[in-house]
Length: 457
Image (cartoon, rainbow, N blue to C red; front, side):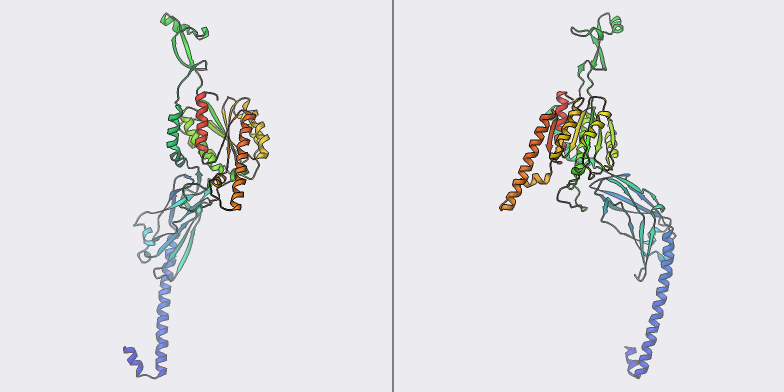
Protein backbone atom coordinates (compact mmCIF):
# COMPACT_ATOMS: atom_id res chain seq x y z
CA UNK A 1 0.00 0.00 0.00
CA UNK A 2 2.86 2.36 0.78
CA UNK A 3 4.41 1.66 -2.65
CA UNK A 4 1.09 2.31 -4.32
CA UNK A 5 0.66 5.59 -2.43
CA UNK A 6 4.26 6.58 -3.30
CA UNK A 7 3.79 5.76 -6.95
CA UNK A 8 0.62 7.90 -7.07
CA UNK A 9 2.74 11.00 -6.34
CA UNK A 10 5.34 10.19 -9.00
CA UNK A 11 5.20 10.64 -12.73
CA UNK A 12 5.26 7.72 -15.21
CA UNK A 13 9.03 7.68 -15.80
CA UNK A 14 9.73 7.43 -12.11
CA UNK A 15 7.33 4.47 -11.75
CA UNK A 16 8.97 2.72 -14.69
CA UNK A 17 12.40 3.24 -13.18
CA UNK A 18 11.31 1.78 -9.85
CA UNK A 19 9.86 -1.24 -11.63
CA UNK A 20 13.10 -1.83 -13.48
CA UNK A 21 15.12 -1.61 -10.29
CA UNK A 22 12.68 -3.95 -8.55
CA UNK A 23 13.02 -6.55 -11.31
CA UNK A 24 16.77 -6.20 -11.26
CA UNK A 25 16.73 -6.78 -7.53
CA UNK A 26 14.55 -9.85 -8.00
CA UNK A 27 16.88 -11.13 -10.73
CA UNK A 28 19.95 -10.66 -8.58
CA UNK A 29 18.29 -12.48 -5.69
CA UNK A 30 17.17 -15.31 -8.00
CA UNK A 31 20.63 -15.69 -9.50
CA UNK A 32 22.13 -15.74 -6.02
CA UNK A 33 19.71 -18.45 -4.91
CA UNK A 34 20.34 -20.37 -8.11
CA UNK A 35 24.10 -20.18 -7.64
CA UNK A 36 23.77 -21.27 -4.03
CA UNK A 37 21.59 -24.22 -5.11
CA UNK A 38 24.06 -25.13 -7.85
CA UNK A 39 27.00 -25.17 -5.44
CA UNK A 40 25.04 -27.32 -2.99
CA UNK A 41 23.97 -29.65 -5.82
CA UNK A 42 27.55 -30.01 -7.01
CA UNK A 43 28.71 -30.94 -3.50
CA UNK A 44 25.78 -33.34 -3.11
CA UNK A 45 26.68 -34.98 -6.42
CA UNK A 46 30.25 -35.51 -5.21
CA UNK A 47 28.93 -37.01 -1.97
CA UNK A 48 26.68 -39.41 -3.89
CA UNK A 49 29.58 -40.39 -6.13
CA UNK A 50 31.40 -41.80 -3.10
CA UNK A 51 28.45 -43.80 -1.75
CA UNK A 52 29.04 -47.56 -1.45
CA UNK A 53 26.10 -49.68 -2.66
CA UNK A 54 25.53 -53.32 -1.75
CA UNK A 55 22.75 -55.40 -3.35
CA UNK A 56 21.38 -58.41 -1.46
CA UNK A 57 18.73 -60.98 -2.32
CA UNK A 58 18.31 -64.73 -2.52
CA UNK A 59 20.78 -66.23 -4.96
CA UNK A 60 17.92 -67.95 -6.79
CA UNK A 61 14.52 -66.45 -7.58
CA UNK A 62 11.37 -68.59 -7.99
CA UNK A 63 9.49 -67.92 -11.20
CA UNK A 64 5.99 -66.35 -11.01
CA UNK A 65 6.58 -65.07 -7.51
CA UNK A 66 7.65 -61.84 -5.84
CA UNK A 67 11.03 -61.64 -4.15
CA UNK A 68 12.60 -58.84 -2.12
CA UNK A 69 15.76 -57.07 -3.26
CA UNK A 70 17.61 -54.79 -0.83
CA UNK A 71 20.03 -51.98 -1.61
CA UNK A 72 22.31 -50.79 1.18
CA UNK A 73 23.86 -47.29 0.96
CA UNK A 74 26.63 -46.05 3.22
CA UNK A 75 29.78 -43.96 3.28
CA UNK A 76 28.41 -40.60 2.07
CA UNK A 77 30.01 -37.41 3.43
CA UNK A 78 26.85 -35.30 3.67
CA UNK A 79 26.95 -31.85 5.26
CA UNK A 80 23.94 -30.36 7.04
CA UNK A 81 23.28 -27.74 4.34
CA UNK A 82 22.51 -30.44 1.73
CA UNK A 83 20.73 -32.95 3.95
CA UNK A 84 17.28 -32.01 2.59
CA UNK A 85 18.10 -32.86 -1.04
CA UNK A 86 15.69 -35.45 -2.47
CA UNK A 87 17.22 -38.64 -3.90
CA UNK A 88 15.42 -40.99 -6.30
CA UNK A 89 17.18 -44.25 -7.21
CA UNK A 90 16.32 -46.89 -9.81
CA UNK A 91 17.94 -50.31 -9.91
CA UNK A 92 18.41 -52.01 -13.30
CA UNK A 93 16.85 -55.47 -12.92
CA UNK A 94 17.22 -58.53 -15.20
CA UNK A 95 15.14 -58.64 -18.37
CA UNK A 96 13.20 -61.69 -17.18
CA UNK A 97 11.90 -59.83 -14.11
CA UNK A 98 9.55 -56.89 -13.50
CA UNK A 99 9.28 -54.23 -10.82
CA UNK A 100 6.52 -51.87 -9.75
CA UNK A 101 7.96 -50.08 -6.69
CA UNK A 102 10.71 -47.95 -8.26
CA UNK A 103 12.02 -45.28 -8.02
CA UNK A 104 12.82 -45.37 -4.31
CA UNK A 105 12.87 -41.93 -2.70
CA UNK A 106 14.71 -40.68 0.39
CA UNK A 107 16.53 -37.59 1.63
CA UNK A 108 20.24 -37.20 1.11
CA UNK A 109 20.74 -36.62 4.82
CA UNK A 110 19.74 -40.24 5.47
CA UNK A 111 22.99 -41.28 3.76
CA UNK A 112 25.24 -39.36 6.12
CA UNK A 113 27.87 -41.27 8.05
CA UNK A 114 26.24 -40.23 11.32
CA UNK A 115 23.00 -41.94 10.24
CA UNK A 116 24.83 -45.16 9.42
CA UNK A 117 23.76 -47.59 6.71
CA UNK A 118 20.53 -46.90 4.81
CA UNK A 119 18.69 -49.97 3.52
CA UNK A 120 15.85 -49.67 1.01
CA UNK A 121 13.97 -52.60 -0.52
CA UNK A 122 11.72 -53.27 -3.48
CA UNK A 123 9.80 -56.23 -4.90
CA UNK A 124 10.92 -57.98 -8.06
CA UNK A 125 8.65 -60.38 -9.96
CA UNK A 126 10.35 -63.10 -12.02
CA UNK A 127 8.19 -64.04 -14.99
CA UNK A 128 10.56 -66.30 -16.94
CA UNK A 129 13.07 -68.98 -16.00
CA UNK A 130 16.70 -68.50 -16.89
CA UNK A 131 19.78 -66.50 -16.13
CA UNK A 132 19.38 -62.83 -15.20
CA UNK A 133 21.91 -60.02 -14.94
CA UNK A 134 21.50 -56.89 -12.81
CA UNK A 135 22.80 -53.57 -14.06
CA UNK A 136 23.84 -50.39 -12.30
CA UNK A 137 21.86 -47.88 -10.26
CA UNK A 138 20.58 -44.54 -11.56
CA UNK A 139 20.30 -41.51 -9.28
CA UNK A 140 18.30 -38.31 -9.60
CA UNK A 141 19.14 -35.49 -7.16
CA UNK A 142 16.67 -32.63 -6.78
CA UNK A 143 17.32 -29.42 -4.85
CA UNK A 144 14.86 -28.52 -2.06
CA UNK A 145 13.27 -25.73 -4.14
CA UNK A 146 13.09 -27.99 -7.21
CA UNK A 147 15.11 -25.54 -9.29
CA UNK A 148 17.91 -27.92 -10.31
CA UNK A 149 18.15 -31.66 -11.04
CA UNK A 150 21.31 -33.73 -11.39
CA UNK A 151 21.57 -37.30 -12.72
CA UNK A 152 24.21 -39.84 -11.71
CA UNK A 153 24.84 -43.46 -12.67
CA UNK A 154 26.60 -46.02 -10.48
CA UNK A 155 27.89 -48.75 -12.84
CA UNK A 156 27.36 -52.42 -12.15
CA UNK A 157 31.06 -52.93 -11.52
CA UNK A 158 30.96 -50.53 -8.56
CA UNK A 159 28.06 -52.30 -6.84
CA UNK A 160 28.91 -54.92 -4.25
CA UNK A 161 26.95 -58.08 -3.60
CA UNK A 162 24.67 -59.83 -6.09
CA UNK A 163 25.18 -59.05 -9.77
CA UNK A 164 23.51 -62.04 -11.43
CA UNK A 165 20.72 -64.40 -10.49
CA UNK A 166 19.08 -67.62 -11.63
CA UNK A 167 15.31 -67.79 -11.98
CA UNK A 168 14.23 -71.34 -11.15
CA UNK A 169 10.97 -73.22 -11.39
CA UNK A 170 8.79 -72.42 -8.39
CA UNK A 171 8.79 -75.80 -6.67
CA UNK A 172 7.29 -74.50 -3.43
CA UNK A 173 4.20 -73.28 -5.24
CA UNK A 174 3.99 -76.52 -7.23
CA UNK A 175 4.23 -78.64 -4.10
CA UNK A 176 1.68 -76.57 -2.17
CA UNK A 177 -0.75 -76.68 -5.08
CA UNK A 178 -0.70 -80.47 -5.31
CA UNK A 179 0.14 -81.62 -1.79
CA UNK A 180 -3.43 -82.42 -0.81
CA UNK A 181 -4.03 -84.39 -3.97
CA UNK A 182 -0.78 -86.30 -3.51
CA UNK A 183 -1.74 -87.33 0.01
CA UNK A 184 -5.20 -88.39 -1.11
CA UNK A 185 -3.93 -90.44 -4.06
CA UNK A 186 -1.22 -91.99 -1.87
CA UNK A 187 -3.83 -93.20 0.59
CA UNK A 188 -6.02 -94.55 -2.21
CA UNK A 189 -3.19 -96.35 -4.00
CA UNK A 190 -1.79 -97.71 -0.75
CA UNK A 191 1.78 -97.13 -1.83
CA UNK A 192 4.34 -97.32 0.93
CA UNK A 193 8.03 -97.94 0.79
CA UNK A 194 8.72 -101.48 1.90
CA UNK A 195 11.27 -104.22 1.40
CA UNK A 196 10.37 -107.31 -0.56
CA UNK A 197 11.89 -110.69 -0.05
CA UNK A 198 13.54 -112.12 -3.08
CA UNK A 199 16.70 -113.14 -4.85
CA UNK A 200 18.09 -109.68 -5.45
CA UNK A 201 21.61 -108.57 -4.73
CA UNK A 202 20.88 -106.49 -1.59
CA UNK A 203 21.53 -108.43 1.64
CA UNK A 204 18.65 -108.17 4.13
CA UNK A 205 19.17 -110.56 7.05
CA UNK A 206 20.25 -114.03 8.25
CA UNK A 207 17.41 -116.31 9.37
CA UNK A 208 16.68 -119.97 10.03
CA UNK A 209 16.62 -122.23 7.02
CA UNK A 210 13.13 -123.00 5.65
CA UNK A 211 11.93 -125.56 3.14
CA UNK A 212 12.33 -124.23 -0.36
CA UNK A 213 15.38 -122.07 0.35
CA UNK A 214 18.28 -122.49 -2.04
CA UNK A 215 21.29 -124.38 -0.70
CA UNK A 216 23.49 -121.65 -2.16
CA UNK A 217 22.02 -119.20 0.34
CA UNK A 218 23.11 -121.22 3.41
CA UNK A 219 25.51 -119.28 5.62
CA UNK A 220 27.82 -121.98 6.96
CA UNK A 221 29.52 -119.74 9.51
CA UNK A 222 26.18 -118.78 11.05
CA UNK A 223 25.09 -122.45 10.88
CA UNK A 224 28.17 -123.47 12.86
CA UNK A 225 27.59 -120.73 15.39
CA UNK A 226 23.87 -121.48 15.95
CA UNK A 227 24.18 -125.27 15.53
CA UNK A 228 21.35 -125.25 12.98
CA UNK A 229 20.96 -124.38 9.33
CA UNK A 230 20.93 -120.63 8.75
CA UNK A 231 20.35 -118.92 5.40
CA UNK A 232 20.99 -115.49 3.96
CA UNK A 233 17.93 -113.54 2.88
CA UNK A 234 18.17 -110.94 0.17
CA UNK A 235 15.73 -108.24 -0.87
CA UNK A 236 14.72 -107.15 -4.33
CA UNK A 237 16.22 -103.91 -5.49
CA UNK A 238 13.16 -101.85 -4.69
CA UNK A 239 14.70 -98.57 -5.76
CA UNK A 240 14.69 -97.67 -9.44
CA UNK A 241 15.91 -94.90 -11.67
CA UNK A 242 13.51 -92.55 -13.44
CA UNK A 243 14.71 -90.71 -16.53
CA UNK A 244 12.57 -87.97 -18.02
CA UNK A 245 12.94 -87.24 -21.73
CA UNK A 246 11.85 -83.61 -21.94
CA UNK A 247 10.77 -82.29 -25.30
CA UNK A 248 12.00 -78.69 -25.58
CA UNK A 249 11.13 -78.29 -29.26
CA UNK A 250 8.73 -76.05 -31.09
CA UNK A 251 5.50 -77.63 -29.84
CA UNK A 252 6.46 -77.09 -26.20
CA UNK A 253 6.56 -73.31 -26.69
CA UNK A 254 2.78 -73.11 -26.56
CA UNK A 255 1.22 -70.90 -23.90
CA UNK A 256 -2.40 -70.16 -23.16
CA UNK A 257 -4.07 -67.37 -25.09
CA UNK A 258 -4.22 -65.32 -21.88
CA UNK A 259 -0.73 -63.80 -21.87
CA UNK A 260 -1.21 -61.47 -18.91
CA UNK A 261 2.13 -61.12 -17.17
CA UNK A 262 1.42 -58.26 -14.79
CA UNK A 263 2.74 -58.35 -11.26
CA UNK A 264 -0.64 -59.42 -9.91
CA UNK A 265 -0.59 -62.48 -12.16
CA UNK A 266 1.19 -64.72 -9.67
CA UNK A 267 -0.29 -68.14 -10.45
CA UNK A 268 1.73 -68.90 -13.54
CA UNK A 269 -1.35 -69.68 -15.68
CA UNK A 270 0.52 -68.30 -18.68
CA UNK A 271 3.35 -70.84 -18.34
CA UNK A 272 4.45 -72.71 -21.44
CA UNK A 273 4.10 -76.45 -21.94
CA UNK A 274 7.77 -76.79 -21.07
CA UNK A 275 7.34 -74.93 -17.78
CA UNK A 276 4.42 -77.14 -16.82
CA UNK A 277 6.40 -80.25 -17.80
CA UNK A 278 9.24 -79.18 -15.51
CA UNK A 279 6.79 -78.63 -12.66
CA UNK A 280 5.40 -82.13 -13.14
CA UNK A 281 8.91 -83.59 -13.21
CA UNK A 282 9.82 -81.87 -9.93
CA UNK A 283 6.63 -83.05 -8.25
CA UNK A 284 7.14 -86.65 -9.33
CA UNK A 285 10.80 -86.44 -8.26
CA UNK A 286 9.65 -85.47 -4.77
CA UNK A 287 7.24 -88.41 -4.60
CA UNK A 288 9.78 -90.82 -6.09
CA UNK A 289 12.48 -89.68 -3.69
CA UNK A 290 10.26 -90.61 -0.77
CA UNK A 291 10.07 -94.11 -2.28
CA UNK A 292 13.85 -94.34 -2.55
CA UNK A 293 13.91 -93.80 -6.33
CA UNK A 294 16.26 -91.48 -8.19
CA UNK A 295 15.27 -88.98 -10.88
CA UNK A 296 17.09 -87.36 -13.78
CA UNK A 297 16.33 -85.98 -17.22
CA UNK A 298 17.56 -85.62 -20.77
CA UNK A 299 16.33 -82.65 -22.81
CA UNK A 300 15.99 -82.73 -26.58
CA UNK A 301 15.12 -80.09 -29.11
CA UNK A 302 16.20 -77.26 -26.76
CA UNK A 303 18.37 -74.28 -27.57
CA UNK A 304 21.05 -76.07 -25.53
CA UNK A 305 20.29 -79.66 -24.47
CA UNK A 306 21.29 -81.11 -21.11
CA UNK A 307 21.76 -84.48 -19.45
CA UNK A 308 21.17 -84.70 -15.70
CA UNK A 309 21.92 -88.20 -14.43
CA UNK A 310 19.38 -89.65 -11.96
CA UNK A 311 20.01 -88.81 -8.31
CA UNK A 312 18.14 -89.16 -5.04
CA UNK A 313 18.41 -87.86 -1.52
CA UNK A 314 17.62 -84.63 0.24
CA UNK A 315 19.17 -82.46 -2.46
CA UNK A 316 17.49 -83.99 -5.49
CA UNK A 317 15.03 -81.12 -5.98
CA UNK A 318 17.77 -78.50 -5.79
CA UNK A 319 19.81 -80.59 -8.19
CA UNK A 320 17.00 -80.75 -10.75
CA UNK A 321 16.14 -77.07 -10.31
CA UNK A 322 19.70 -75.98 -10.94
CA UNK A 323 20.12 -78.30 -13.91
CA UNK A 324 16.89 -77.23 -15.62
CA UNK A 325 16.59 -73.51 -14.85
CA UNK A 326 17.94 -72.35 -18.22
CA UNK A 327 16.15 -74.88 -20.44
CA UNK A 328 14.43 -72.93 -23.21
CA UNK A 329 12.02 -74.22 -25.82
CA UNK A 330 13.33 -73.64 -29.33
CA UNK A 331 11.86 -73.66 -32.82
CA UNK A 332 13.55 -77.01 -33.55
CA UNK A 333 11.63 -80.14 -34.43
CA UNK A 334 12.06 -82.90 -31.81
CA UNK A 335 14.31 -85.82 -32.77
CA UNK A 336 12.76 -88.76 -30.90
CA UNK A 337 15.10 -91.41 -32.23
CA UNK A 338 18.21 -89.45 -31.30
CA UNK A 339 17.07 -88.92 -27.71
CA UNK A 340 16.10 -92.60 -27.43
CA UNK A 341 19.65 -93.59 -28.39
CA UNK A 342 21.01 -91.07 -25.86
CA UNK A 343 18.81 -92.56 -23.14
CA UNK A 344 19.99 -96.08 -23.95
CA UNK A 345 23.60 -94.96 -23.75
CA UNK A 346 22.93 -93.13 -20.45
CA UNK A 347 20.82 -95.75 -18.66
CA UNK A 348 22.60 -99.09 -18.45
CA UNK A 349 20.26 -100.33 -15.74
CA UNK A 350 16.59 -101.10 -16.41
CA UNK A 351 14.74 -97.88 -15.64
CA UNK A 352 11.45 -96.07 -15.98
CA UNK A 353 11.61 -93.73 -19.00
CA UNK A 354 9.03 -90.94 -19.13
CA UNK A 355 8.56 -89.04 -22.39
CA UNK A 356 6.90 -85.62 -22.02
CA UNK A 357 6.08 -84.20 -25.41
CA UNK A 358 3.41 -82.76 -27.69
CA UNK A 359 3.06 -85.18 -30.55
CA UNK A 360 1.84 -84.09 -33.95
CA UNK A 361 0.41 -86.60 -36.43
CA UNK A 362 3.44 -86.44 -38.69
CA UNK A 363 5.70 -87.42 -35.74
CA UNK A 364 3.82 -90.63 -34.86
CA UNK A 365 5.98 -93.05 -36.87
CA UNK A 366 9.21 -91.58 -35.50
CA UNK A 367 8.17 -91.75 -31.85
CA UNK A 368 6.82 -95.28 -32.33
CA UNK A 369 10.28 -96.41 -33.41
CA UNK A 370 11.92 -94.56 -30.52
CA UNK A 371 9.60 -96.11 -27.92
CA UNK A 372 10.02 -99.59 -29.37
CA UNK A 373 13.79 -99.16 -29.14
CA UNK A 374 13.59 -98.06 -25.51
CA UNK A 375 11.08 -100.76 -24.56
CA UNK A 376 13.61 -103.47 -25.33
CA UNK A 377 15.31 -102.63 -22.04
CA UNK A 378 13.19 -100.10 -20.13
CA UNK A 379 9.63 -99.45 -19.05
CA UNK A 380 8.23 -96.43 -20.96
CA UNK A 381 5.52 -93.92 -20.13
CA UNK A 382 4.53 -91.31 -22.73
CA UNK A 383 2.79 -88.09 -21.64
CA UNK A 384 1.28 -86.48 -24.73
CA UNK A 385 0.17 -82.94 -23.92
CA UNK A 386 -2.98 -81.37 -25.30
CA UNK A 387 -3.67 -77.63 -25.43
CA UNK A 388 -5.80 -76.45 -22.52
CA UNK A 389 -7.36 -73.75 -24.73
CA UNK A 390 -8.89 -76.41 -26.97
CA UNK A 391 -10.36 -78.26 -24.00
CA UNK A 392 -11.83 -75.00 -22.76
CA UNK A 393 -13.49 -74.45 -26.14
CA UNK A 394 -15.33 -77.75 -25.79
CA UNK A 395 -17.04 -76.41 -22.68
CA UNK A 396 -18.16 -73.14 -24.29
CA UNK A 397 -21.75 -72.57 -25.39
CA UNK A 398 -22.37 -71.66 -29.02
CA UNK A 399 -25.35 -69.90 -30.58
CA UNK A 400 -24.22 -69.20 -34.14
CA UNK A 401 -22.77 -71.06 -37.11
CA UNK A 402 -19.19 -69.85 -36.61
CA UNK A 403 -19.10 -71.05 -32.99
CA UNK A 404 -20.62 -74.38 -34.03
CA UNK A 405 -17.98 -74.87 -36.74
CA UNK A 406 -15.24 -74.00 -34.23
CA UNK A 407 -16.65 -76.51 -31.75
CA UNK A 408 -16.81 -79.22 -34.43
CA UNK A 409 -13.22 -78.56 -35.53
CA UNK A 410 -11.89 -78.67 -31.97
CA UNK A 411 -13.88 -81.80 -31.14
CA UNK A 412 -12.55 -83.54 -34.26
CA UNK A 413 -8.96 -82.63 -33.36
CA UNK A 414 -9.30 -83.81 -29.76
CA UNK A 415 -10.95 -87.07 -30.85
CA UNK A 416 -8.16 -87.68 -33.39
CA UNK A 417 -5.54 -87.12 -30.69
CA UNK A 418 -7.21 -89.68 -28.45
CA UNK A 419 -7.17 -92.18 -31.29
CA UNK A 420 -3.49 -91.54 -31.91
CA UNK A 421 -2.74 -92.10 -28.23
CA UNK A 422 -4.58 -95.41 -28.28
CA UNK A 423 -2.76 -96.50 -31.45
CA UNK A 424 0.58 -95.48 -29.96
CA UNK A 425 -0.08 -97.56 -26.86
CA UNK A 426 -1.17 -100.57 -28.93
CA UNK A 427 1.90 -100.44 -31.20
CA UNK A 428 4.51 -99.92 -28.49
CA UNK A 429 2.96 -101.48 -25.34
CA UNK A 430 3.89 -98.25 -23.57
CA UNK A 431 1.66 -96.50 -21.06
CA UNK A 432 0.37 -93.43 -22.96
CA UNK A 433 -1.10 -90.58 -20.93
CA UNK A 434 -3.02 -87.95 -22.88
CA UNK A 435 -3.70 -84.84 -20.80
CA UNK A 436 -3.44 -81.08 -20.58
CA UNK A 437 -0.41 -79.51 -18.88
CA UNK A 438 -2.58 -78.68 -15.88
CA UNK A 439 -3.54 -82.34 -15.50
CA UNK A 440 -0.02 -83.63 -16.07
CA UNK A 441 1.27 -83.72 -12.44
CA UNK A 442 -1.56 -85.90 -11.14
CA UNK A 443 -1.68 -88.12 -14.20
CA UNK A 444 2.07 -88.78 -14.03
CA UNK A 445 1.93 -89.56 -10.33
CA UNK A 446 -0.95 -91.99 -10.91
CA UNK A 447 1.06 -93.72 -13.63
CA UNK A 448 4.17 -93.87 -11.43
CA UNK A 449 2.26 -95.36 -8.49
CA UNK A 450 0.67 -97.93 -10.79
CA UNK A 451 4.16 -98.96 -11.92
CA UNK A 452 5.36 -99.16 -8.30
CA UNK A 453 2.35 -101.11 -7.13
CA UNK A 454 2.62 -103.80 -9.76
CA UNK A 455 6.39 -103.80 -9.86
CA UNK A 456 6.61 -103.83 -13.63
CA UNK A 457 9.36 -101.26 -14.00
